[in-house]
Length: 118
Image 1: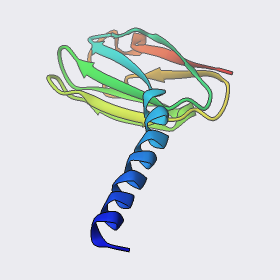
Image 2: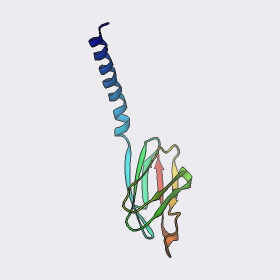
Image 3: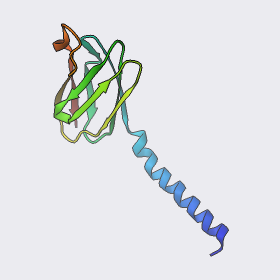
Image 4: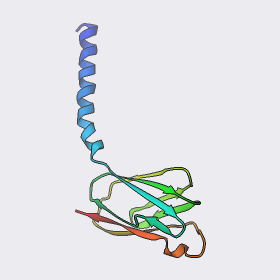
């Protein structure tokens, strides 16, 4: 097989592979969560079992933590930066999350939940 034909076949194979992967990427659910003293917004997030999720966490005021032990998620949220957490839920249920870096009186009220549905 000549070099141009081989090159064309490689390009075509790469294009087909790209088309096969693209739908999986397009199905990601992106959720933006904002942290500020004593609250997460939104504080309730609903996602689907088996669908990849990207949490984009931002802080409006200071260092906060994001901890969701039931889903084994943990991240620091620094002001002025976006912290990204990727996961694919594999079980249905409600999973509480909270700030795990003390941010002052009222810190214990900084919580929410991730709801995973079928």
